[in-house]
Length: 239
Image (cartoon, rainbow, N blue to C red):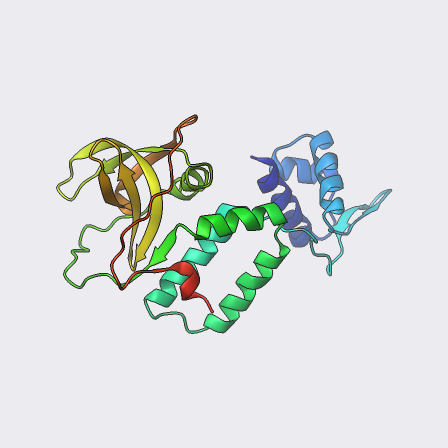
């Protein structure tokens, strides 16, 4: 369990159980007493009010009004929220768009400046549009959860991406490409990349991509992607 997941689990445990002890929390999250004490110190620094009462019947408890004062969301997590809202809006199924936009604005406002910078750079790679009615959706699958974290590093650091790809006929190949954009045509999502071997842009359906990895040490330049007229940057999809 990584540090952030473990600390989130500690907060959930305190909210759920009320008063708890270091020993119980350590058992719940599978960590040592020393690690839990260190995590609690970090959580207090982040704004969580965690009280401790010594003696029999005592323990730790979280102030019910306590909230963290610093954002713990990664760029990929915020980006996942944004693209979910954007794809729903593009499909015309976002009934509470005003509340969604307000919530996302608050999240962005709470992010540290370096994460905001990365988020904006990441957003510059995202486009939305409408899917052509003749596209076959009968074989649409689920997307690999590893895609977005790999894409984040690849797009922000300009690293090439390597992945396994299954085409429409089921044939599987290994691809090495320069990621240039992500395109949402609800309900399909595409990676738009420059293929150095073919010397052309290629569109890869993201539900057909598996085992994505960015290639350390590889660098490429940003290219202008020629999109159709009905495709627009995600920034135009938000007020």
